[in-house]
Image (cartoon, rainbow, N blue to C red; front, side, top):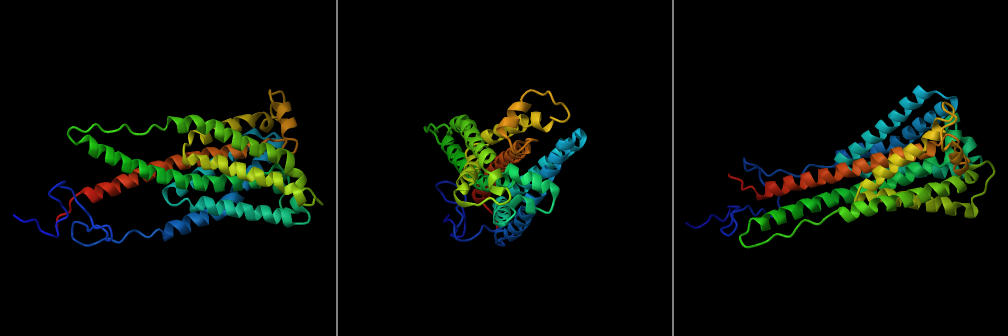
Length: 330
């Protein structure tokens, strides 16, 4: 019997061959238009606008609690910062990485306003902001969100590529007499991820520690003093963007930064904690170590968000490929 021309099956493979230019019909024969992502873009962009000010406000309040020796308040505010950042990265992972890009741009605009103001940090309307700005917190949030957005985008694409490769390898495995190639190992990405992320983020934070506070002090002129903060921004963004290859480095580096901040954060509660004196010398303009805690919190959640985006990309691509290969019956 001759095969019907409208049938999606072929005699050679027995699988569906959908027309690339038109969407697949559903079982009722009605073609479904692809879902519009405009709502995803608008939602994540709105969250990206409010994420930097909320994150910085919580970080500033945490630093104030540290200065006052209020341990319980410090813990609650620190956990709220972590929760806020994690929820935002989860939303960006399942909807669109545009939110991270918008958040980074908003933080950069805030940084520009600070630099262009004649009084710089002292012009901030809140006490927590006047003490937080010299630590470089605004630039830290900007760099990590910008780099994290790019890393999340790359991670999602990598997940889709992994799904397509998995389908091809499975098809080769079903052919008689064909030995399928082993899937590529990601061990090298994981191994180099941690040292590269640690060096990039650590160097960026070190540049901010020595060159940022004088830039935002009253009466300071910009001039060549912008070089170190600009380089720090690039390094922070690069460290976060490495999550596109592997998120291990971001998660380990972020956790270590948060751990290293504890002697300074708890100095008013337990003054004799080891490492407090070293941090005081390394962070002369950040007595509470909030810059380390903030960078660690954002970096950990950025890494987790990129990991989730890779998984979502892989699962979504597998589902789409499966739907294309499943013959539809009118």
